[in-house]
Length: 321
Image 1 (cartoon, rainbow, N blue to C red):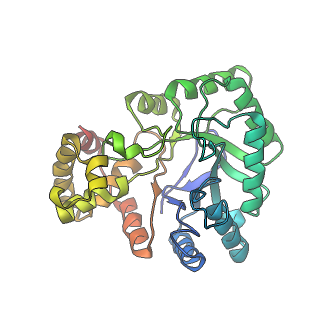
Image 2 (tube, rainbow, N blue to C red):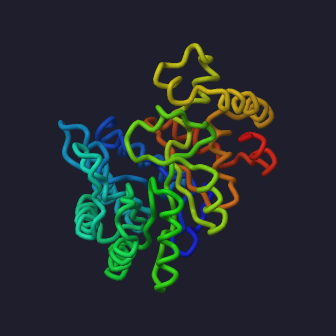
């Protein structure tokens, strides 16, 4: 495993971050614990969850992903060894058009997440959505207060526009406060079609956001980092064998061209397409911590192997061209 420090923080985390949206829902608690154990045994320390995860399942307790992680950390006694990132301030799923980013809503979700996770602090607290109508002053001041209280070590943005992130950083700098330590966008080697976004309010890495990351040396923690296995499925099944949802989300001329280029690196490195796709993210010119969405230990091991693959900056640029 490789470890990086998130700039402007004291947080050192494994460069691969385990996505936990299926813990306690798609996976049983026993399966979830086994996956978490395997990740930790391989040197993984960074977990990504959210207050809202699996709340779309009416048959399950609320925030089951957070609660499963909390039970696991209590059972293993390893809280101090784990970097916990969780997201809050997501709109209610029944009213996605109504933002929830007031100071009271941020603090409410944070306190509930602390309880679910059975911890008194969260390493990296993400704002799951933005409300562009809300002044950044409210947001920055609220999160800095929570840092002073020791409830969070740092905070980040998820699904925010680059101009709004820059506004947060500018306000923080002008008032000698902490700004965003990281950003969590949708980002993979695969260029997404509109159907890939699924829910309202999601934001993908684009040229403007990438330039902001490079300028600020802002850490990125990309979700959907392997495009739901698109390149692996394309290699195994061909374009005609893809499911309709996969074709609608990722089948386009850009990705077919990138797939052809990827094949050269797959052969040269004796690697899987999914590993080349991860290596592309792991070696960007600013710190990156791709979120890997694994349901099985075999999938976890496949992703872990990407750490050893080295790509040159020329190869990275060529892949994405």
